[in-house]
Image (cartoon, rainbow, N blue to C red; front, side, top):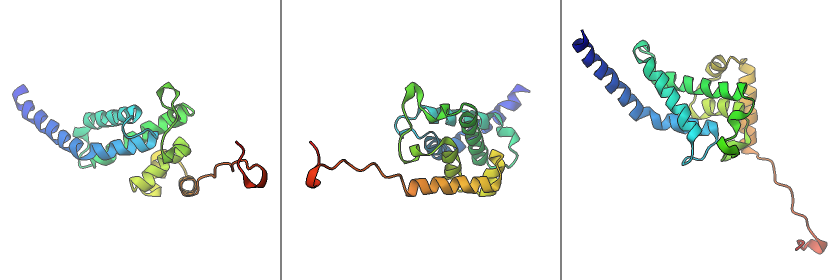
Amino acid sequence: MRERLAPHGARRTHEFETFVAGAAGRLLHAATLLTAEPQDDNPRARRLLTLALAHTYACWQRLHGEDPYEHARRYLATRFAHGAWHHRGGIATRPGGARPHGPLARLTPHERLILVLRLYEGVGEEQVAALLGLPLERVRTVCDRATATLLHPPRSPARAVGRAGVAPS
């Protein structure tokens, strides 16, 4: 019996390795956008990716024609959402207290999640709403607000100007 299962297990492993070779880079980039970590220093994003891939591998035989990329992305998003919603901002800061990095750092974790799913991953509003258990209008509003924040960042305070337009020294 064990001899008959070995080729099946090898095929499963090969199929999964092929999937990972094609999808891991994009999933890691999505996770890095979610965590707002630098591309070259993203331990939380790598952890999210590892958990998503491990979960996908564990479910590999039960996918039955389901898109494994969609499965991994869904797990990645829900895992991130769980951390963002249940740890009240704990997901927003990096280990050691470092602040989020890059253009998405100005967004809340919820805004990043919805924006990444909608704009980077191209997931429809209805699917995002269903995945996160939010009303469709809420997803639309959060996505619009996040997009506006990125397109029109708050201005930095004006520099103090001394007499006759000369900057103070």
